[in-house]
Amino acid sequence: MRNSFYFLIFCLIVSCKYSKSSNSQTATEASKIKNDTLEFEKSSELSAISTEDFRDFKVLDSKYLSKATIWSAINQQMEDFTEEDYNRLKPLILEKSITELQVSRTRNLFSYEELTKFYLYRIRKFDRENPLALNSVIAINPHVIAQSQLKDKAFLDTRSKHPIFGMPILLKDNINASHMATTAGAVALKDNFTGDAFIVKQLKSKDALILGKANLSEWAYYFCGDCPSGYSAIGGQTLNPYGRRIIDTGGSSSGSGVSVAANFCAAAIGSETAGSILSPASQNSVVGLKPTVGLVSRTGIVPISSTLDTAGPITKSVRDAGIVLDAISSFDTLDTKSVGLDKWQGYFTQPPLSALKGKRFGAPIRLLKDSLYKQAIKVLREQGAEIVEIEEEKLGLPNFIRLLNIDMKKDLPAYLSNYADSAITLRTVNDVILFNLKDSVNTMPYGQKLFEGITNDKGDDVFLARIKDTLQTNGKAYFSVPMRTFNLDGFLSINNYHAAFAAVAEYPALTVPMGYDESGVPKGLTFIAEPFQEKLLIDCAILYEEATKERVAPKDYN
Image (tube, helix red, strand yellow):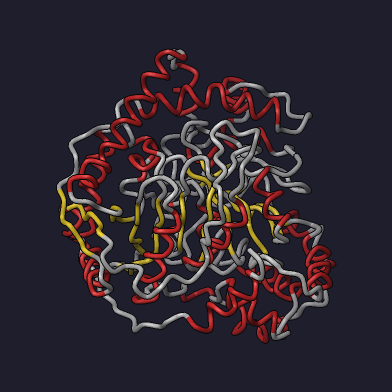
């Protein structure tokens, strides 16, 4: 990665620009596609963890956090940053990619300290206790300003720097990070102060700044079963900046998706078991990358499933996702699924303009009812891709929920024993259930049905092995049969529609904004490929993104 920082700036200057194309979709089309997907989820036992469009929230604001408590340790450090400073920096920072931010820093248009304070000022201005509140940020790193000042000093060193150098990053609050509690949104973990997760150490080793923690659907959306995306007892209800209380945030990395969409950070980290990066990224018109399972460490992350879990980037641009993936991917001896790649993958390098030429993608026929998807297919064809319309394999995902149950029953105790604060005495899922029952109105207003399902599941290791084998076989066959039959390089989906199949197959997936329906709801075009084909996904998605430029910032937050 020698001189990669400067190469990235060069990429910005030489990258090709395309004219924007746009399209809209009728509410009838959107409803039909969604109904088809929901029918699939029901038949596959996935309805309990699918995105639910709530309009009547039982809880909006956190009962455990307030704006005052979040900012108490940092307000004094922000006294020298004014509204005038904020407005001066806005055109240099708002909606800018990591590459563009680094170009401005290289030109001394702002410092890393000013960049950090801009995001902090913006979060404090918009995120809680006001008419535009999004409740997307759950904690602020009290040392981030001092750390940004050190980056400014280190910037003067002429040695090669990673492109993520000095970039303020938000972490989903199931990822351990020093100086902030890791709560998974749960009251039971409100005092869970830990050391850094492996991927946080990776970010710091590349000189990224940990800005704070983002809210999430509690316990990564494997807790209540009858609750809205984006709700946690600690963080309250996260809301979508494209339509507060109207458009679903997606889950479970809700705060990460919303924070990136609202320009509260340079990038964010989410985690996914089956759709938890793809869903909030697409719902908030940003880029989400779910890596191949094993490419990114899970050590120090509150788990659902050691079989399926992975962390990954949520960003405003595809190249930014490549930058973040490059920073966090590394072999981890403590993660049993970790895989180390032999050579640098160049995830953030600019692809040749011919990268899509001759690439063959499968497009499920039923998705062609979606006019945004049809327009995306048209653009890909214009860029030289070959699109093959396919019928999907008639395969299900039997016992998917039971896989999560059995995994979490053993994986959560392992996290609590090995990576939680010693003050946390809870050790099992049942311990958490009993804890919540002591104050159910505040700790579990939507119930805890999925946790109760975990404790009631009597599946053993033998049964778990059979489930894994069946699910992985079906998941791989779902993609590999058409891919081999039609000699495909990848598969094209919408949002998180095929996230569960990608999860059990352990395939990577990347979603990129493809427009907005007539109600203003964002949608993403999702690329799926075989394991460790992240570079292929990123290259193709970069060219699609540059040809369309579909992302539009939420208007009330500019």
